[in-house]
Length: 290
Image 1 (cartoon, rainbow, N blue to C red):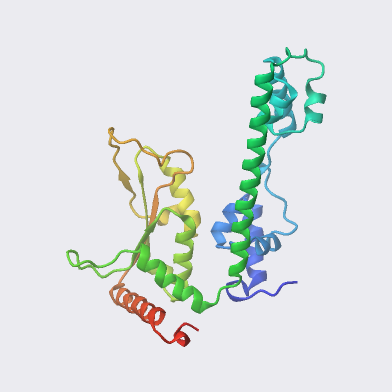
Image 2: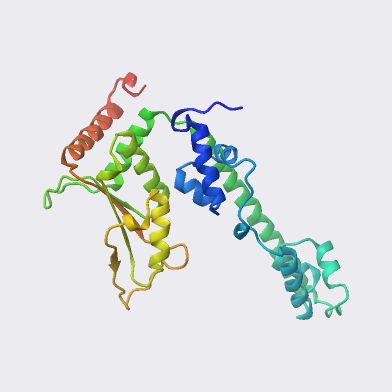
């Protein structure tokens, strides 16, 4: 069994929490985001022996494909065309539609177009597989993260994405807002490393008024590991009829803001930490980067 280090040292305690959430009906993604466990191997071990909830299973997938295949066959599509549309094997298509009448024979030009489309679809699938493998390999290169590495990462993350004091707006306080739940998760883990208690944190959802507001609140509350009641008053963005919005659909959940109370001194330390990183990174002596 692979050793567990760092934030996963209390493996049994973490497993008990994961099992409890699983039995409450949460999906792997919900459990991952709730516990901030983004290592798939560790997540698999935490949930070992626990079946997924019924709502995450796709019911009657084959029946659905069979019905669609028969519908396409009745419209005159060939086995090749149905395979392109549904992505299933020709043998399965044959079993599902062999009692239906055959379509009229295609001309040569149509056959050539279909062959070209199949080749292109295959090429796209190969490219996507390589893309995903590159990402998986890169993620594996990171490995376990030490407290110091998380500390430095958090400083850089805050100084790039967090609120900063400006000449025209001198305001020294720690406030972080982002639409990426993973960025929020890393930021909260960094605050925990710094010993910032949850009692000092205030949370707020900022979202467009036409979005599914209750769903967004539940989503961000799960990310932060809090109850929806702990969220502050939501900020709604008004709709401009002259603007064509791109951030629409079920995946749009707005932004999540985390503010630390009584954080002026912490802000100054973050700024000092950042310039300490800059000085060490730009130093001519490589030993400063060990």
